Length: 376
Image (cartoon, rainbow, N blue to C red):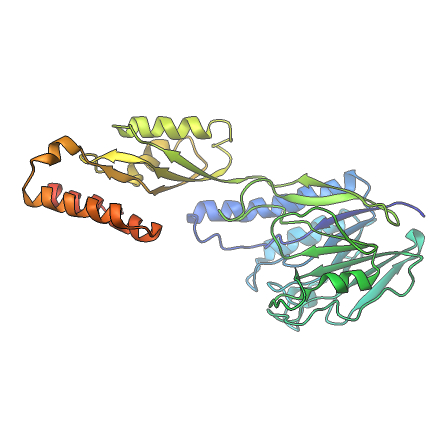
């Protein structure tokens, strides 16, 4: 059987609002998503891909800019020899007002609707199956009861959904391992989960989630990309390739011992120096003990590092270090407050409650010493 080269991608979420970013950075990130799609299309062209599978959530919601639509159409027109198949997902379901219906897509692009459908590609001896969401939630499996028509052909399917164990539920097309096995597909291409999986096998069917091609928030850390490779009966040779323009990083940094903002900034720069801070997006979580007379503000840290980082979010999880010797004979209101709070911290087992008590000590001292809490 002839080898068929596929590119499996999903979850671009075009025109995501990027609410945690500032207006200008949010707009740049929207363009980053478009650029990433362009890189994926170029990769399909360079690698000689026969079939490109877009497994849902191409759009993030109904608010899609005309520029995004024009860009997508233009890029797909650049690969007329690649057969493109789209299975709408929960964020971009197929309905009478969806862009899948209202826009004139290129001839090489096929969009699956509610009913299971098969497209036969005779020159490749291949059948591509698919089915799409028609609403935001799909509580029944779209794969239930399915089995391929002709097992002698190479049979591929594109779907958006979850893989769950028997008895488990999901609002997003709950597919069971048994249904995957009974499908007798050669490859099931899935979208919805934003992290790539291994190429799994159940019965004779190989399946995988490709993850998302570009991270969009700090719950989507590290490398993002697509799956690409050759399919033959019982022999998928598919690999993960990174495609993201930028990465999200979350770094926890202990700044105990820092006495100045300059020292704090030096700690952060050292930890991030090999992670391309001028290109990527960072959440820095500062931990450790700080001197009680240092009214530490994250806004000052961000300002000092603004010229080094493309995007920087700083969170303060530090606690206040109190000199035990100075407290031994301090019977003022301030001293009694510190002793009481420290005793409560020692006795608290629950981590969340302990953190609240540490914050109460930190901000209480600021109020007693400076007349303000300095809460940002």
